Length: 388
Picture 1: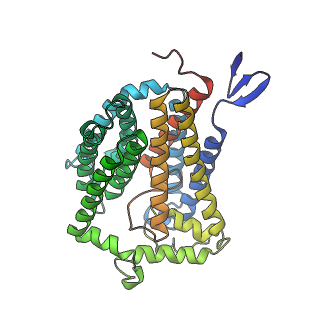
Picture 2: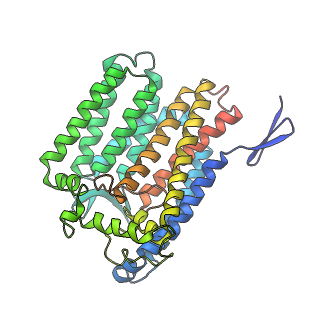
Picture 3: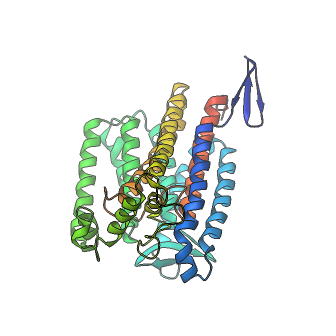
């Protein structure tokens, strides 16, 4: 049946349907718009006091958003097979960049953490790109080793060693939040990729045991892990951030206190425009907006797995594994961030994808979404046929 490719649509048998996944595009644009509004609202007081201009963070976030959209558009015009070939090289670049942040004079230390590389007027956070690079690599590994995935060494141990190396570097920064997101995403990809259940369960148990041990031996991490269980036991110290976030949620009620009317952002809630922007959103826009944001991320996760199923149905296994990995990556980070904001999980330094202030996070999220849209387009249009 003949089909004519037109800008933005695919015409077939007299019917017109979009080339790009409209649900993914719509959800992404709404999240980016909400992020722009909430970053400005949550940072206005802090920016005015610390930077001398109330739109300081808004201007920077707008710049990152535009660059992110450019990178997303560029990624959407590439080919999936290119990313499959680049996977090992991207992983190597990511690991090297994690080493660089630990070198004095190259890595920048902020609030006791060395997570950034200074590049003039901007800071690059390699861990944000490392998450995506790991997913791109593991998707390729699952394809290359699909015949031996049920073997313990080839199936799960080798990937676990890669995750362990990345995790060790992240813990030296320290950045346990990124380590958790990478571990959750990779092991879920391995499970979906077909490793033996008992192999998966064994490594998962070892991984959880290792995280528990790392938490116990570190007073800082132990305080974070236990304070969320009863933050009001020490509301002015270990539980301070979570207490302020919970107050924000309480003030929001159903429809919120009104856009711009947050009290907690007025120097009560630390990191109000980054890690805890979701709490400010809950205070200003209420439970309805909170559920709306959750629904948007739910759409992204569901569409990622729908695209993965479609790719697998036409024999594009790498595309399927990559789509699953991206859905898991964006979904797990969003769920952890929202869980932290609501006091369901220990505090972690993780942004809310597309919404929180943070250039590296926003750029990496946009590239990931561009990849997901690219996979959907290739599967829908049959562009993978005849690919070298």
